[in-house]
Length: 358
Image 1 (cartoon, one colour):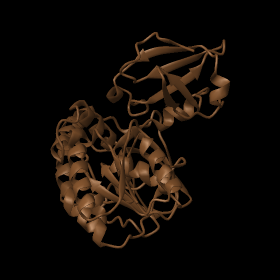
Image 2 (cartoon, rainbow, N blue to C red):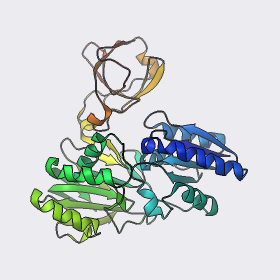
Image 3 (cartoon, helix red, strand yellow):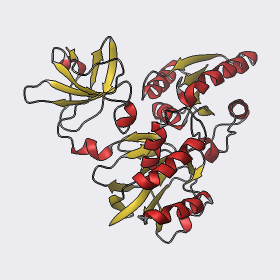
């Protein structure tokens, strides 16, 4: 049996239309399958782990690069093949893999070809498949999120890119690669397994997804008035030719920058914010009958049993796009006060600020 993991909000709901077409094809070919829908960020990994327990012969993801990476995390080490049927906003990793971009063509490709090996990169214990970056590309994604996800393909990223020229602030970057530590003001920093980001921007044309190495790249900061010129050249696959671009192959790299936000396969996380937090908790809590995941921390750990009876106060309720990807639907950020109560920041749409949770 095959498991179909569907992100119902991918591509502004386009994934649901693709799901119906995929179901029809699999049914016509007498291939048994089970459809599972994601409910919140990280849910695809949970479903993939269930697929392993069920003994599924394959997992097909209907969604974008982020959902695909999540599912891959759940399957890591299982030997179960995974296929991507692109239905997201950017759909970049299929370009690197050579899988057709059209969903039904990609399904036919998956069904008619043997699985191929693919590298995965470990970022602080979380694997990803395509690209992780900091700096200019994060600013672009934040601007894309402000568009509300109403447009698919390259166009929203081009709009976000133009806006980012005026909003971007340089990274004060410290990085260690191949045993050498450097500090630099950077326009962007990339760790790549794939070639493309942003619906078709060739960020690392030389990347090979199964060579066992990370393509690490740092682009030095440039005056704003020069950025449009270099962006045009980047679209022509010339980024690696810039004199201020450093590109190395490695198997490990360490990067830090104050307040750094990182995009991981199109999803934004705040790495430095988490590292600097002194009392973030890692657990789950039930809110209005739902079990929600608390973002992991480093100083203390509460099991769900230990959280029973603790008073929890919602500090604020903000839109997911304004929280730099750390808080999205289904996720809570939790810090402990001096009295042992838990203060929450949440992006839950149906949870009012000031709500009391026991």
